[in-house]
Each structure stands twice: as structure tokens, then as C-alpha cells.
Length: 347
Image (tube, rainbow, N blue to C red; front, top):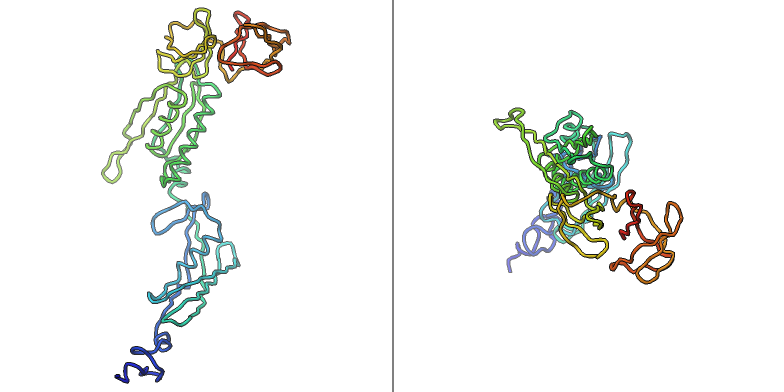
């Protein structure tokens, strides 16, 4: 056997090949630590900047410190079994000193090192907050209604949908899809948005929830990097009748379940079956099921139900409906037909 293959030429210790593990570790620069790391963050929304890209970070400050400290450490490719412990202290609001301890294995021998990293916290307004504060927008979702003004419920639903769309898109990485403002106008509400995509998503969601249709109206506002810049108005027109409206037609009551003007999908509140109704067939609107009152069942007798009027506390007799099974003492939801002074059971 060749003696140079079994003896370390530097220290004379036995080795399988070349330098022994201890001498290899001694001459290997197995760890490099950057003494300082700059962390750029937005003071408004806490977004973090990596290179030239902003990203929303949903993490505790301690997690961000650990990530930044570890990013300052570079290990040799032969290092194995790495275990890292990070500690930190904040002497000032804009400085953090992190201590990174590394335990690992290099050429079968355990190694240990300690790095001290200074993290400099640098404030900078992110692209999204800069656009919002500067009044930048790419679209307006205008919500109006046919023959009336959108009511409080529709305005609340529209606003909720807008913020939900914003949250969903930003969680998906579209940072510039934001809702800048929601403004009430004389005829409805305007939702000012930061991107055309969120404007389209909001319009689709609102018409899906409340009915109606929308149209788009782009307007050329300039040019950037050789590309035309447009702002788009999304005009939503809600129908006159809403889902949940209870209407009277030829002495019968119907609850509107779906609106596709002029055809309405309705539920016959007396027979308990669905059908289609034309807008022209409607005599008047009674109310909406959201406005229903609760009336207690005083008695049931044959085809009659005795309801305790929630307004006068008189007992009112109404016909049994085949789609409900009321019990004495239980509440039923009713609407009041002011023209005929009847209580209409809606649920």
C-alpha cells in the first residue's frame, strides 16, 4: 500500500486520501458572514423590498429578523447537518443586532461558528402606498340602479365585495389591485380601484350577487414607455327589483329569487312552487324578506293559522302554506301588505 495515501502529509495523522479531515477543516473557509444587512420596508403597510420588488410579508418581526440574519451567512458546499440559532437585540428603532450561531459537520468533524449581523431598517414608501397617497387609479366601478337609488343593503354588499376582491387578489400576488376609496354619490356609489383587473372582478362579483349587468367604458389618459394608458369606467346597472323582493301580482304574492330583466324567477308564497314572472305582470312591491318581522303562531286549525300581529298584538288568521309546518308558539317571518292590511308569510 502506498504510504502517501494513508498518512496526512501535513500532520502525519492516518487518512484515507490526501489531507486528514482536521487539516482539511483547518484550511477551508467554510463560513462567510456579511456584517450588515439593509432591510427596506414600507412604514405604512410593512411590505418588504427585495431588490427592486415589493412583497407583502405576513410574519412576525422576529421571523423577519431571523430570515435577514440567516441570509447574511454563506456556507461552504461541503457543510452538512446545519443547525442555526438566532438571537437579537434592538438598541434603536432603526437598528437590530442579530447573533447567528451555526453548528454543523464538515468532513465528518463537528464545526461551530458565531456571526454578528447588523440589520439596518430603512423606510421607503412602497409602490402601492405611493400610488394610493398620490391619488393614482386605473378604474372606477359606478353602481347605479334602474328607476331608484341603491339601498343601504346593496351599498353594504358592494363595499364588502370590493374589499374581499382586494384581499383575494393581493393574497394572490397582485399588490397593485387595491381599492382606493368608496364614495357615495347622489345616484349610488363609486368604487375607485388601482387596476383594471380588480375593477372587472368587482363588477362581475357585484352583478352575480345583486343581479343586473355592467358595461365598460375605457378612456385614453396618456402614454408610458410607448404604451397607451387607459382608465376604465365599469358601469353597473342594478335592476329595479332585487332578490328577496316580495311582489303582488293578480292577488297572489311572490318572492323574487333571481332577476334577469324583464324575466323574473319567483317563488309562489301560497303554492310553494317556482315560476317565471314578467315585470309587466307585477302590480306592486310589498317589501323585501330582509325586512320581515317575526309573528308568533297562536294556533293552527285546519287550513288556518292564527298569527300574533307583531305590531298590534291582535290575532290575525292567514291560510296555511304547504311549504311550512308551523308549530304553536313558534315564530314565522311575515311582511305586511299595507294596501290590503294582510300579513304575508315569507318564511
